[in-house]
Length: 186
Image (tube, rainbow, N blue to C red; front, side):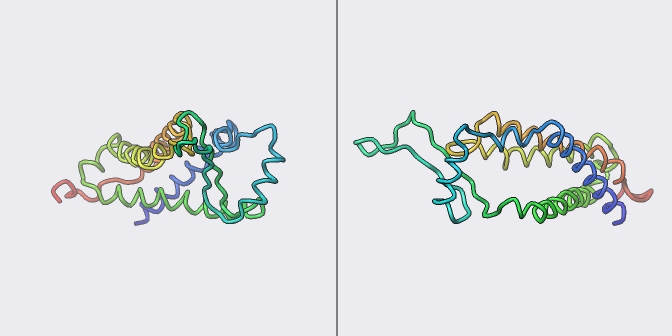
């Protein structure tokens, strides 16, 4: 269990460093989630007065005289989480917990796999790459669509998650080893 915890902690450190580099130095997430418009102040005031409850709001074009949505008109969405900048510290603490808890769960899952997986460094790394791939497929790529992310942004987040979990796997794979001489026979 101590190897699982230490591997998870190392994986969390890798996630923190990777996130700092890719987001802090290169602005990856900000380039996708914090785009600005020229009339930001006016739009902010309209939203502040009209969007009160947290949630995702979708703004569709006006229906045609036939009562259908025009297929070529854009659809906009606004996401309001119910928090302001004053909540950033608490939000970062939750993120920090997740950054350590997720790799620990991954390390624990890896420790429960077969001897064949645990005895091969590439297989252990691939195990974590598969976790990233699952997140990419069932979370990131599902964010593409009407009123959501453009396909390029959803794909960028998918690649980000696959790379993140592969990097975690590179570190965790060193710590999780098959146990005992007879591990192969069990």
